[in-house]
Length: 440
RNA sequence: UCCCCGAUAGCUCAAUGGUAGAGCAUCUGACUGUUAAUCAGAGGGUUCGUGGUUCGAAUCCACGUCGGGGAGCCA
Image (cartoon, rainbow, N blue to C red; front, side):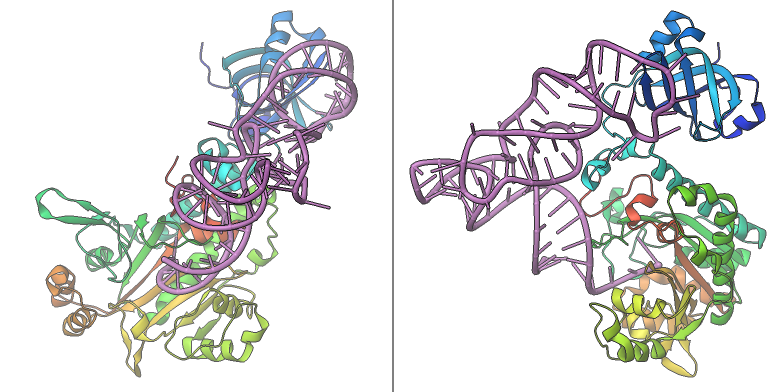
């Protein structure tokens, strides 16, 4: 006999009055003498199942008694609306079939510490909040791709094993690659996406990226997922318009479809409802001036001189001035990647922008117009102390029908953390990879 | 890499240099409306490791291990 359920618990209302079979896991059990309450979870939702001793066979009641937290089972009963049930519906149980018993499930409904939960991440994902969070992640990823596809973008995947450091400065994870020497895990797919842009016009890559930096904060992972669109003929200003439309579409979709999950997470959605394009823009220069005028208002914030990058407290101060995400544009070229197009009016700054999320979640997008002149690009590669031969193919893109173009990279986990109101980025991915954690 | 903090029962934590404790979880019993049920009872300890100070160390000191928070760097 099939173990497949008659219906998912999420659709239980459609079966009011009918007898159904549900398959899932016991989320919680309360025994009250001749009455047992089983909370059954099937991944779509949970439902209270009520077992009355006088209504079922003796062995059925005995099996219900035997069930423990997270044991898997198939429960058959009649669906009925009941105000006393947490979801409004409950199952009047007729039969219980045990599929797999769970003994001493480690995660109880009580509180646990971070270390313990991370050590049991493979089980923690069954908990209500983690479940809601990962559903939101899936919605963000699906929407991001659907939106870009609808705009005429082609998904164009970049390699994960690469020969060189794309942006030079960061530390990379390395591995031996047969007789060809060292290979490195990609820290961005951008350079490769630029080749696709010249082929398809509008492309994006989406996949994991790797940074071996010893960052140890709530905003960092060593392995994170990034979506990187790239558009031919688009300039810096048009790039920002694309970004704000993209981000507001994602937020809107999560509000529309994952309201229940946001509620589970106790997320205040009013700041999210304000995330509508256009987003404010502030220049790097004005950002520095703002910091120097108001640094005393933020704890740990210090004055800065032109040419330095913003620290976490500086970003917080800037985002506090606005009610939605804010672009900080035209940073000094010296602190940005080699491939960014200089501002023709002010060559010391780059045509780039970081998008800072509100409520202190920090940078969620980094983007720029790219250098489209082969000679300038080659000069920049040399200035950064990089090996020109490694970038021959990348420079080639500018030798054969070059066009101005722009693109950006959006960090999925930071976006999910921001939208869901999650303090630490480690909960926004099933298995976070961190400086001091690779298990499980 | 730097600064700060922590490690005691399965979990979350208490114990002011003087007999190792509680709540939850587990097990046993009672209960026909529980929502983290309640009530009664039971079992459960290399106090992270090594060394030191002391009549006596979970407690003080040194080193180590593991972890947490933050900085820098970034998405």
